[in-house]
Amino acid sequence: MRHRIGSRKLNRTTSHRLAMLGNMVASLIEHEAIRTTLPKAKEARRIAERIITLGKRGGLANVRLAARTLPNKKLLTKVFDALSDRYAERAGGYTRIVQLGHRSGDAAPMALLELIDRPQEEKEKDKEKKAAAKPKGKGKAKEAEGGKAQSKG
Image (cartoon, rainbow, N blue to C red; front, side):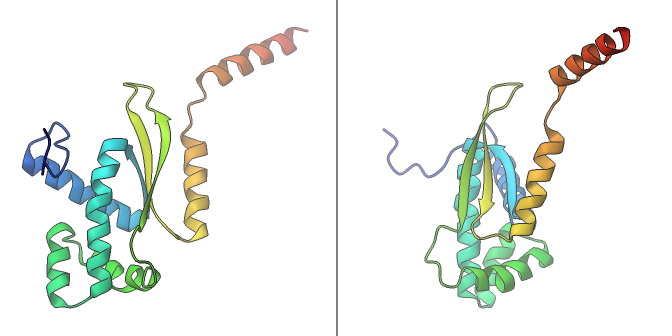
């Protein structure tokens, strides 16, 4: 039975897991969206929601609690200023997980972990990055064959 077992181990040691999740939350707060595997996204979501809640509460003690996970002062000021104002009326649920399918190399389930209500400009930038990052392996081969066929004819 799994009673009172808190989180996933993710096949990592405790120190590695805590460092990885802290880095993921820092990247999430900085970029407001990250692409990772589904189990990692679910674990990072738990930590990110707690950090944003600390930011909403404010106070020196909560700043110090958040600094355990986010040692970067720039990110701490973002949490306690911009994000606390953005989510002041929201009771919880500051993040969204969108499933993206499976990774081509090892078929791991991939997900997009993003902050709710992020500015529209950042969403457009993410769409441009996705379009640029898509592999075009077969498409180029067909174009090359088509180009050769047209030059011969």
